Image (cartoon, rainbow, N blue to C red; front, side, top):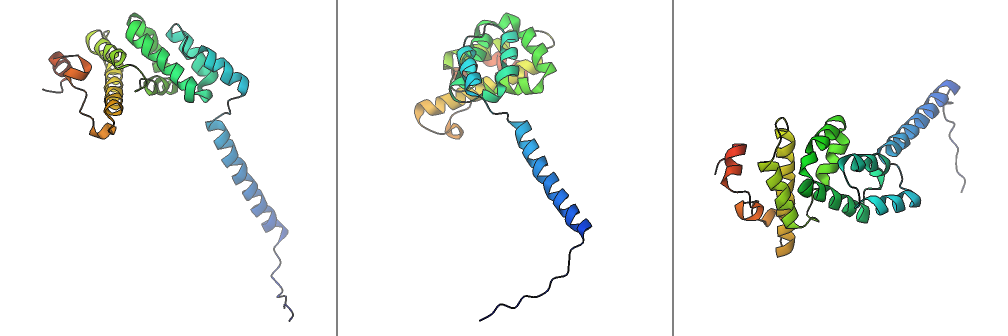
Amino acid sequence: MYLKLVPMKPISKLHFHLVALGSLFLALSVSDFAGASQKACTVAEEMQALDEADRLRDWDAVYRSFIRFAHCDDGAIAEGYSDTVGRLLASDWKHIATLARLVASNKKFESFVFRHIDETLPIDELNTIASNAQKSCPAGQIALCRKILESARTAIRAASARLVGSSEADAPPASDKLCKIGREDAKWWGSGG
């Protein structure tokens, strides 16, 4: 049994080069896009980020660490950042204007901060954060305070659901009992009830 070879129409060199260049361009574009979106965290960076993530003392230090190590924000490093963000929002509210300035200048940093108001924080700390956002919001920072309050409430719901062994969707909404904020919160934000 013999295979019969069928002659194919020859491809012009120009056509071949255009297809090859197009394929190369596509491959480089995809790899550049993937590389630009997530830089690899080296072992040295991981060690440095892990060492400092939960010991940062102010918002400027958090921002500098974010600039250097945002690509390492995972696992134990992420928990350290959450500890720091929670501590600063609960215990260093007097410097909220510094946070406001930093998140206004860098939306990725804003996302970073809100991502770290999470269920890994103690509920009493989340309650303090929510209370600070509701009761001590500086003039001109209402939008930021609303986002902080909503992030804290979401984290409280998630933490409460985890504690009772249900999903976040099954957890009751963050209420007066969970947030310890009171009815003034609903009036202040205009959400009724």
